[in-house]
Image 1 (tube, one colour):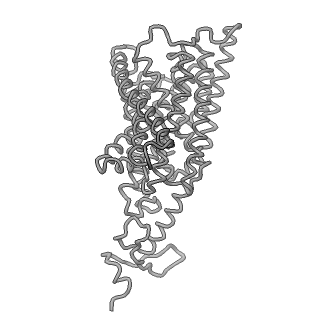
Image 2 (cartoon, one colour):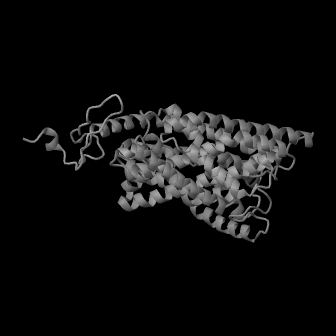
Image 3 (spheres, one colour):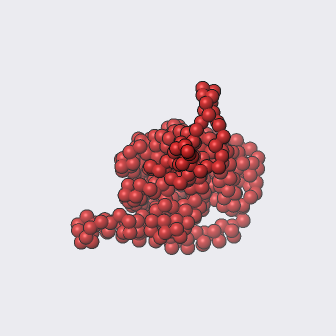
Length: 477
């Protein structure tokens, strides 16, 4: 008579194994697990079953307060460093309106992304929403866009690391070397596989960015007051620069759009929350924090420095202070960049090993595949940083090509196709339809106008003999 195990399992190999030094008895295969298991047709050993249980617990420890920290790490970083330059182009009035308006739109769009995750718990990452809308084709389209956007994001952090290291050291070392150093740091910080673990680094990151921003604001204010005894920043203007071109204005606008690009990560983060419905607390908290921080740093640094403010803004604080500020900002440059690598890696790793315990990164194979994937993604990001060595341009391209969809015109489609319930003529549906219509039109505008502006801007940059060149040792600070 066959045993119960033989009746339920047909795994080809069941050699005796041990559970460490504490147990010497062979580990017997368990029954095939069908309840809530990603691979109901597979048989599992007792060790594999335990590893899956441990893995699920490990990847379900994220609360909304830690999520706020992670979102700040992911969002309030490089975007804030480009805002003063955008304010200088758009003018004080245009900059403030853009900062507050885009912040409100981005916060609402992120809320809609989260509602999809709550209604469809099987959604683990942003690409899964594409599958719900357009089937398998939609999954791959959204996945490719999602990965490219985050790779550009990590590349921009690598580029900022190059600028920071070159500014701090004041040496003649080839910037390609600084790029490799930046990539190595980004790689090491992206190794922790869970967002709950990364949140611990997030506290350092948050302290770093707020301190660096504070130093920049205070230093530029003191310097401006010293140089202009009567009023600080004598050449700032409430209105856009004279004769500013459409492409230049759109690049400035896109940099503000980039600063609010946290929506694509929402499903990935919610997938590790122990209480996913609490995501709204994190979203609203982040929205308020971002709008206040971005508006303050954009307006104050522009007020103190004037039209010649640089991007990233830390370069505007003077030679000595900028070196100090960059030193303080190193954690945010690299930690915020690495979390984007982690998001991509979790996305790919969980998909490839969705039917295996390897996805939980608590086995030898899990760690080898995880670290290898992080290394490959970091290398690709380094190539991006070397290929587009202009800080504001790389942010603008990312905003127009990818963020316009992931953060703005796709979330309204989610609501119309996946979330809306009841009559179209109910007050709540009419209200949300109008909100989502505004968000959709804004996203399409960023896509069309933004890409036109980027093409024109890149052509102008290529004709400028003083602009930075790809894969060279020339300074890009």
